[in-house]
Amino acid sequence: VQLQASGGGLVQAGGSLRLSCAASERSIFSGAVMGWYRQAPGKQRELVARITSGGTTNYADFVKGRFTISADNAKGTVYLEMESLKSEDTAVYYCNVRRLFLPRYDYWGQGTQVTVSS
Figure: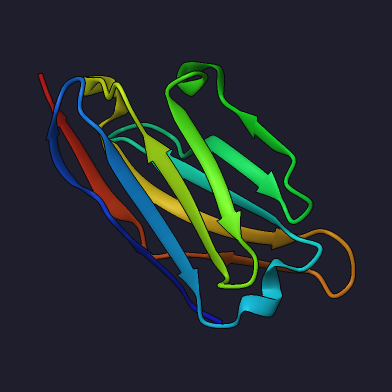
């Protein structure tokens, strides 16, 4: 299974970007949690937002009200809509699909760079 992340780029502070993550097998979304994480230089990877296959979402405090996660289970794609971007949002963003009960799995995308200029 592969996760292909896309949509990153260079944007000015206050701008918007939409990240997408497409799974090579859409069935992996069933019973799973899909998430976006990010890692800035010199920092640990951190959770940005996640969504269950049932549609329940939760967000890190630092993106609440600015980012929106959504998923199209039929397409096997998860999105991250990012608005009001700040320079501190600059990082490599990774998508993740994880299932905690049998059959368990934990898949990561390759990462997409988001750079916010101030």
